[in-house]
Length: 267
View 1 (cartoon, rainbow, N blue to C red):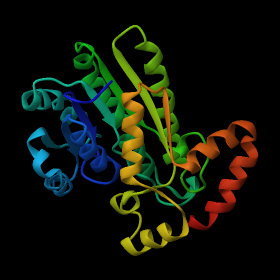
View 2 (cartoon, helix red, strand yellow):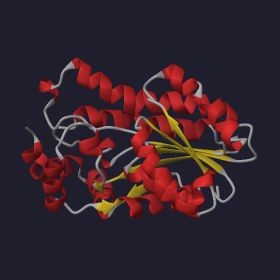
View 3 (tube, helix red, strand yellow):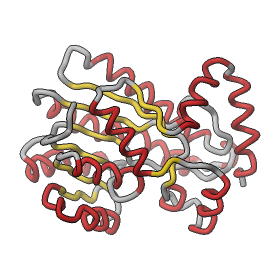
């Protein structure tokens, strides 16, 4: 679905890849409803939109709160008149600790935001998308959704759930005008660790210097190119592309390689 002239909802639009997707959508001629839990982050996104700010509406919503999400379509349609696309991008990671060390509350927080948040938003907007001449849903999974990362087992589980949810939705909607894309980013240069409350900025900067990451603006363009091509799946970054192949051919060796490279992050 070409985004020019369309209305696209982007969750997590107040920072990182979400912000970059909002800005890139505007450059491609779309109208955007940016959703985020952070009013400050959304204000900065709106500021960065510059002369395109009139085509952006901002919505402060915690996507893990079902009632707030259920009220969101009415607010978006009031601002833009319709909704044509949805990008479920909002998410957090877990502490870099083993499953055994995680509390149930920490596990539930990750699952509520990463999985149920996307479910709530999709459930709220899908009836409206089905009424449009064409529509599109993009769900952001992760390289960690098809490959185990030590210290991120619950995060990976949430993203694996998003993978299969998206693929199932794709199959169910084949007879409709709504297309569905699942995205697997590798390591992306964003502040997700800081925004998730898991690292200081200094720790995050050290991590960035140790691992080669795809920049958020490049990731945004890659994702939106896939959306406009109606791609079934999109891999973002050379690491995701390489490990996608490796994990299919030699899954245990691929898991061992990731373990060796990531085990030092576990606290």
